[in-house]
Length: 98
Image 1 (tube, rainbow, N blue to C red):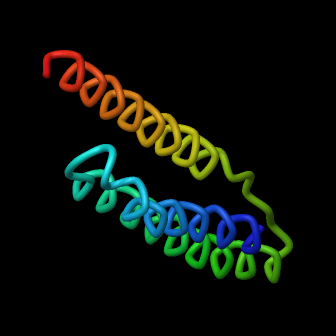
Image 2 (cartoon, rainbow, N blue to C red):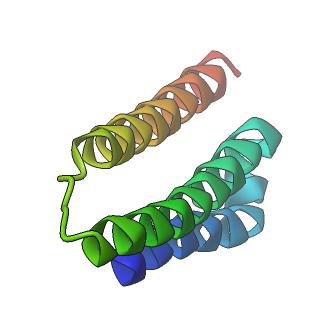
């Protein structure tokens, strides 16, 4: 639904808002911040597009399941989580070297 796409997009953006609080421990988070904002904007844009496309289909008595959107959110969430893990591991290794 439109609400779930909006919540997901805003969730990604809210995670980016937390990144300055973490910056003192984890160095440069600009790539992670950009990825979170881009993911949030992508979810919001796709949700809006999907809403209007579904509305047009329903007015014609048709319905198309949202397979692509589900795969997109799963892949994006996996990439954001994987990127976060890589950043934390790299930071931990850098701290061990010092």
